[in-house]
Image (cartoon, rainbow, N blue to C red):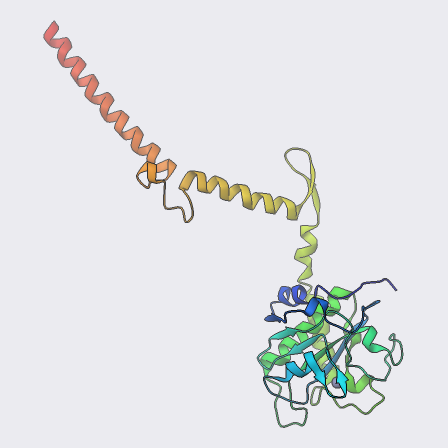
Length: 268
Ligand SMILES: [Zn+2]
């Protein structure tokens, strides 16, 4: 199993999936230990249901030191990124392909805000974000929806979370999102080709320089942002100012030609 280290990419991967993300201050240095490899996602509910549930996940409980999970999913579909290191969320249990009683060291925990008693619905926006968040993580670690697991499916300690979510249907939807693979665009940017100087560059590098140079040329022609023209050209762009100069030169030439003909005829 390849060493993948801590998931310092969590916020980026979720944002790339189009999800709302709040990064809690010290998340990159939070956690109880470093990951060796990440094999899946363990899905939980907070068993609270309020807007301050995330504080418990971050800071812990009297009987368990925080952080308690890498991610909190708010009811409006926003992900709070709490920690990049190992968190205490899994407890004892097993799942095919995961080390028994050691899921904390091999899974990312998502604590979704819900009372966990059936008294709260799962809002569509939260459920949609839950599936897309799981899919984005699994795609990043090269795993399928089979490694998207409910705490109650893993646990040998009688856990019930996430209450009210049909995990087989959930996994089918997660796999569909994984298969859509918006990561394809990112892959395309890694493709290389020879540029006009004959250098081998990636498409991403080429796009970066195109953006810079095209905007420099646009500013030179049109004036500084937002292209209001140049003060020394009476707030005209280079092209409009040149056209004006041409018109003036034409008018002067016509006038001179007229004077020359007039003097010529008197001299004769
Ligand atoms: Zn749980």
